[in-house]
Length: 430
Image 1: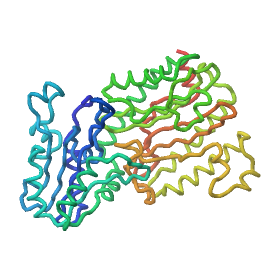
Image 2: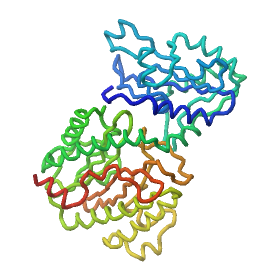
Image 3: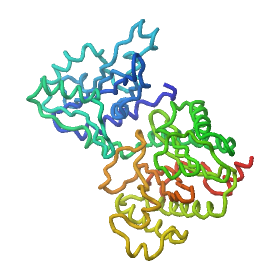
């Protein structure tokens, strides 16, 4: 891994929280992700299943975690099943986790090799009454590929049909939405790397540079700072492209006089950052660009102050909509009459600001969180309002990442990333 070792106490703590919410005499089993094929012998780079990583710190394929707090055999209350390394694997792929390294990484003492799993699992299943299995229940998920967990669940339920099965997800959705201090430090590291990338490109952007060249500058800086790369597919959209919310082609030339929108974030140790900044290709904002930019910035700053314990996500978005409505009236984009006659299910402001303002962030860019429950301290949210005016080839979105505190305004993890117009123009002039 490119990232520095993480103290195993984080994963010990996470397993302890998970175990405390399990029903009596139950066992949880979580699998790593597969390495996904492309064609012939080509594969996608491995990315670990985030729930397994959250509970163990293990970051390699063909890994299985078992948590069985009430197991009669104390040594079997936490188990890792890992791919056994050998000289051939070490030569062709690099060494895999040894038992000693697995303990150091996860804090789990009992490690078996995968070929031993079916035998050990039989013993465990005779002792457990119920089994927690892992599924993807994120509200944005659309899973069309059968995962390693899904295959395991089918196999287990066929072999042991008389057991009771429960879902890991309700527990994980609750636990992962509130970050431990160690996790916030890792997200901050990802944000700091993103800051370095952004400051790098400010001196690179100029008329006729290609969007993909800017993308390349980011990835260079990210990898030089121990990041595996982008936390999500980057959006580098200039001119009209900034009005396409999920524009990822990044293959057009940046023209003088246009604005460029960059929705980019580095990952670090599987934790995400999520930043959006907009700058003028020529280095100077026009008066109209300033008007729209500052309107978005005012909404972002006001919205961030609402991220306090007790806030309901849906109510928060209603309030942000009111802020945006006033700004759009001020910009002459909508009128008070438009607002008076609006469809409540699609308010007038949605013509120019059609997406949500905030989402949970952490191990996943769109992280776990139960949106119907009040916000609490330790949650990390993005704040990312935008105004998109296709007729003017102008799209502005501004985004920072915030940690909710017990009291007071949230902590902005991106406070050091330039956002004010004067500072941006000065940096680009250099």
